[in-house]
Image 1: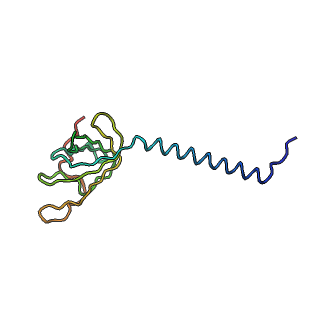
Image 2: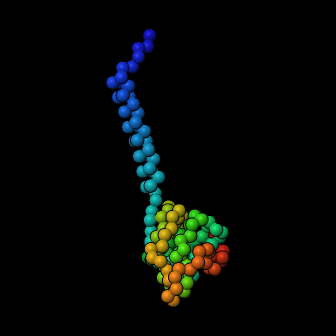
Length: 134
């Protein structure tokens, strides 16, 4: 015949189950974040290209240059490809190959002003309507 579990033993089992759940969640978060990288650099002039509203790519200058493929529908307002206007970009994502990053987050470090004017209006810049290279 089964005997009922005492209250102290029940609380010990509940604590053990809670600790096991926390360990599983922590292991999952660690596995998910270990492949994630963050890079930053200057946008190479003339490299911003868009496929559609949610997929665009750009090249970050550096040693070596890195091609960044962005798959998010959010484009920072300051991300514009104007000649002679440097834009510093920070991207986070996963490596897809040598010097190719699939980014899920993209930020610009500073705001952009051109000839004393404020930031450009929202929306895709004209350079974004040049199809991205595959």
